[in-house]
View 1 (cartoon, rainbow, N blue to C red):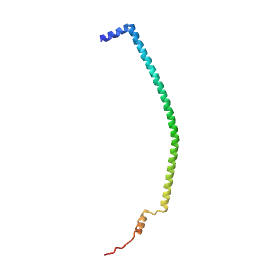
View 2: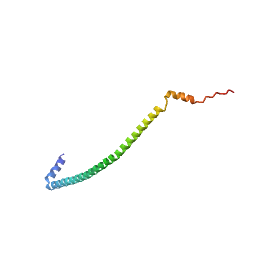
View 3: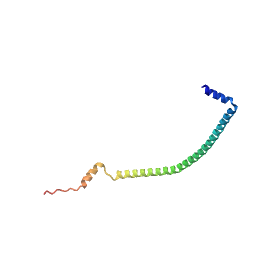
Length: 116
């Protein structure tokens, strides 16, 4: 520990070394700020793009969403119309399920078997 402490003490004592270290730290700080500003600028540009694309996506969604909603409503209306038409047909034309068996039996041909 003494050797490390002696090196730091020697550096602190040398004004030339201290100035070089301070200049290096200032240079690093300047580069860090410059890089941060560049990154912030790029982030702002990307935020603008994201905002623009979001607005475009919402507009497209509204346009096509309205059309899709209209077509879905038309499809549901046609299904409901078909159901109501089919239920009206079955109420008027089709007999009860129990009578269908009798009608089916009446339609079967009765043949007597010939004995040989």
